Amino acid sequence: EAQVTQNPRYLITVTGKKLTVTCSQNMNHEYMSWYRQDPGLGLRQIYYSMNVEVTDKGDVPEGYKVSRKEKRNFPLILESPSPNQTSLYFCASSGAGGTSTDTQYFGPGTRLTVL
Amino acid sequence: GNSVTQMEGPVTLSEEAFLTINCTYTATGYPSLFWYVQYPGEGLQLLLKATKADDKGSNKGFEATYRKETTSFHLEKGSVQVSDSAVYFCALMESGYSTLTFGKGTMLLVSP
Image 1: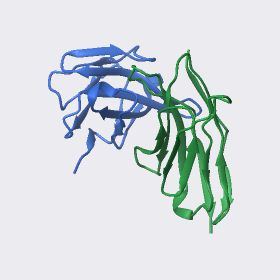
Image 2: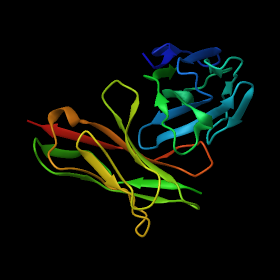
Image 3: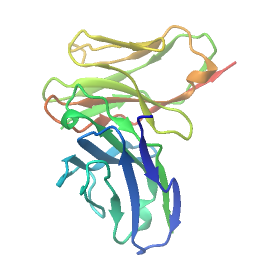
């Protein structure tokens, strides 16, 4: 089954404790992206990657890091989480560089709470 | 910059009622337009899309027409079901780019 998986689905942590949210897709997609969803703000892009070793900032990259060492994986790293990073996070992927004719497939989401 | 504006929710309807969720956009070029749906506890799923002016996207009884003259992409369904209860997001993507710009989402609640 074609899918985007994220782990963990739920995480409660404390300020300053480094964490990684994993994202993996099995569709051989070049393009992958991370979004955060906050009430009243919709979804905002954090980082995206057009292919292996190619990443770029989205609209809200501060406090986040990403890496793309393999095509299927795109982990989101919070080196020193803060309470304002409490949010619902979605990973997405699409083929052909994520052009406007391609569908982005979303993972199930990771709900992060930073105390 | 690009932006998407959706009507605020929640939209509360009875089963079999007609649904319209308004969406307007601002973009510098000629974007593709999308409607995504998020069911409770799940990720977003593409509902329908349109890639150029006057295109109509349709799926599962939902439809939306790309209106360049009014910069709109309103979502409609003739007869909603309880199972349509979800949050609906309008989004755009500029041609040649890969970033989706989302509206804030509209919650739809359908009662039996």
